[in-house]
Length: 340
Image (cartoon, rainbow, N blue to C red):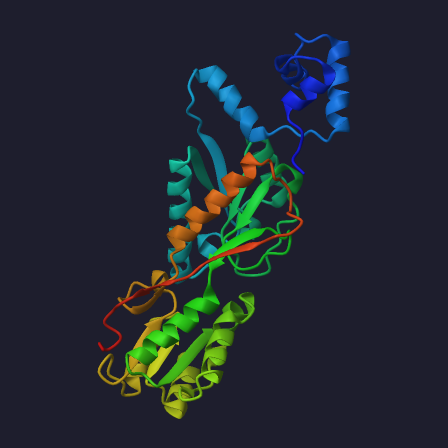
């Protein structure tokens, strides 16, 4: 059921739309008794003001213009110092896509570093409310994400990774499962038959093992394709990789980290003549690779669209039914795989 509008309240009280609007803004031009009656009626029907609309009208009155430059916050909980250079490349693309789309929609997006390497939740809450910032786009957080210290009744938020529970927010992220199936199909189509998957254990767990699940499930339903046990490590290290590579002898490796190609070469592999490498996130590497583009710029843009839509609906606070919007990766050809 939609919230009542000012016009509906005005009709029920027999007052003009302008009088009700000014009474709700505590305007001294409205008789105190009328102001009190309007506010009581608004409270009774559950009316809530839309801060975005209010800010827009204020700006229009000041500038006599329909152009509005509101501000959104891109919250970076870990900060650049708390991530690897590979992860930072991905986060920068997310923020770039978000900022560009925000500007197209009339907003300015500002990045704020929070958490242990930035300002505290309490200080952040004060800053955001003082500046009238209601929309928060959260960049992916490496550990357990906890931003419950903010007073979310004032904010709408969207998370740009798979899952956040403190608080549970709407999220936008890559479709990891579908993207893995796509990559495996692509590699089989190129003539690779012994695929080896290498994953960082913490990364895989944060996504509820979607990369690994898709890899296993695809091979279970395509028994003619040989499935090798994935290598999942707390930290991907050279010694463990070389031992696995020599034991399992994959003809193509799927991994986020391009440096494993150096270890493959040490084992005698020639890329792409004898072995192939598929990068699971080409945005995180500077080395040209074939593999998956998870489209972080598009993810950031879609997150901003969802966020601004929530602000227009005045949907603040943790949603009762948080949803996840997923975007499939696109394939990028590169020199690390042979041609058909």
